[in-house]
Image 1 (cartoon, rainbow, N blue to C red):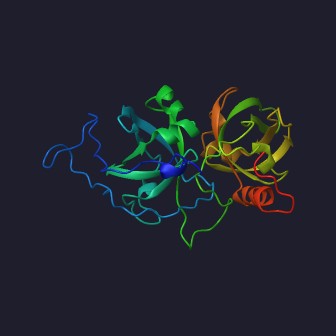
Image 2: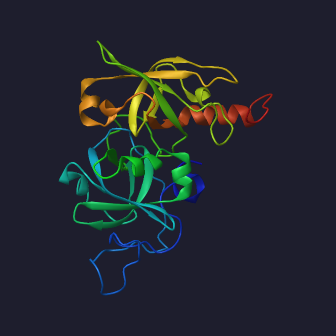
Length: 270
């Protein structure tokens, strides 16, 4: 499970999606702005991202709904809406590392419904605190012809970490404390590999250092940020104690899961 659909905290459960009215009420036929809607029968696909941020957007609306949160975002570049193809309802978009389903569009305003499962498993609750104007990392899902410049990212947040420290002198390094365990019972640091890949707020990064911790201590890992990453993402805005979305490399998760549950002498999740 990860933050997508009902299984792991992704956007939108069942039901009819609403247009962007700002009223918290579903649009009635013939009233309010004209929006295309995502029907309840829409068949989901399984998206994949690369962790290379295509645009830094801004929150223009965050409000509670009976289903969780309605979040409306505008991208930093208009090209995000049309490249490689125009956005379509039901499309999966990584918003700071969380795979969300696009449920309404008006001009450059993209609306997402964030369900309680997503709020509980990600840092989405922080968007309410940050409010209008806060910046988020955006990436559209890849196609078979997309260059894979980062690593395979699912948008399934494995846990919310905390920024322990930030070094800006010389090499810019950020130290992160992950959760001790995931919702599935695995130690998070079992999935973190020296020089391996990790996703932080939707950004594909390389693990630059780590302490694996113990059964009772979460440990930590560090990432080094190059100037381009600082310029093209929100990571330069991080401060100590900030909550951050974390997704481990799916290949590491698969290996640990198989070894725990099916390998010789497996004991199941610890």
